[in-house]
Amino acid sequence: MTRSIVIGAGILGACTALELLRAGHQVTIVEPGLPGGEQAASYGNGCWLSPMSVIPPAMPGLWRKVPGFLADPLGPLAIRWRYFPKVLPWLTRYLASGWTEARVLRTARALRTLLQGSPALHAALAEAAGVGHLIERRGLMYIYPSRTEFEAEAMAWRIRRQVGIDWIELSADELRQREPELDRRYGFAVLVEEGGHCRDPGAYVAALVALAEAEGARRVMARATGFRIEGGRLRAVRTDAGELAADQAVIAAGAYSRALAAAAGDAVPLETERGYHAMIEGVEVGPRTPLMPSDGKMSVTMTARGLRCAGQVEIAGLKAAPNWKRAEILRDHLIGAFPALPRDLPAERVKFWMGHRPSMPDGLPCIGPARASADIVYAFGHGHVGLVSAPRSARLVVQMLTGQPTEIDVMPFDPRRFE
Image 1 (cartoon, one colour):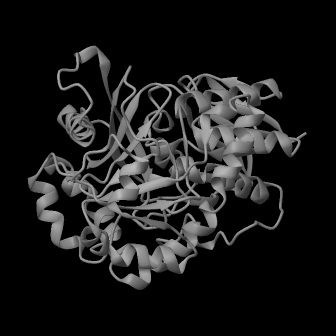
Image 2 (cartoon, helix red, strand yellow):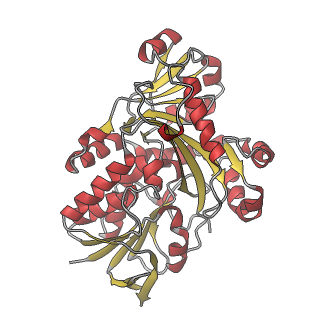
Image 3 (tube, rainbow, N blue to C red):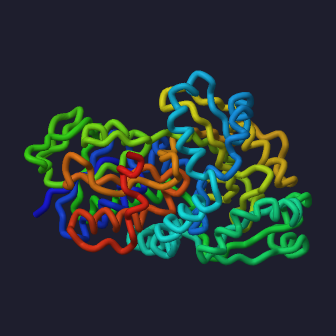
């Protein structure tokens, strides 16, 4: 039986472990923390299962805003001055990836193949893990003060249409009927019915890992540090608790995957886009459908734990301390968007979180074999689409490891595309 090690127990690692088990592998999951714990990006993300998240973060003309990103530490996208010299090569590639509409369209087409149908894939996984109630498929909504603000994003919506995404436009009255508690400054919306969301990403990931263990996977609480490769074949994964014999391995360690990829022979331009969330516990006020306001660019979702607002992009590396003022902005946006929320919330009812999105500069993940050995496959760098893309990414990884044709074209996700 093939001995396969999955490095990482986030959403990518959990889905990959289950796919490997179904392929008849002996599976070991290596993860230093608790699955679904607060240390993981999977825990604190925006909860969205959004097949329409095909637009890369960089768009034409974004380069003009870089001085503002440096000057405003509380803007939607901020770059810390001290980190700027280190991130400059990554940032240059980031801006270049969205330099023209043609480049954005190329990225969108690749992401569409990876994301399409994802809510149904998640629903099946959740049912198998006994947490079917955590996945809801009731659409996702983008809200605007008026149609004018929607039309200002014409390129993004035009590209979405070109790759097969449909939506329903809602007038002010229709929006009010759907979301009566929403502030009346919003007068236009688009509803993407194929979207869904997860009501508790941390609990969902924990349930998937528990299912994998129930089906025979072994979980080792350790940190992977490298590999023992002989003659191009993987023999073991090295960890801070010793070696683990292995025939195959998957690197799904999120923002911490860069050093492991280097140990497997590849210098990948992986960076962390630090994201924040604010969650108000114990409230019933909030959206019926998860929504994203155009004046905030943050997801607002009623979860099993409370009303969550997630977003922000901060480029500051893995080690810098959080800037909790960024989370306070999210909290204040929630209060401003839903007038019925209490203005004097006690501190213990508002929870702040910061995590690390693993991001490649072109908005596309790394899915493919390592240079040092085809026995090692990468599954990281998913940026803003880690949750939604996990089921199909996991299937692609297992298809690669088992020598099957991949169900979609994986060339856009080649780990060595920047060479």
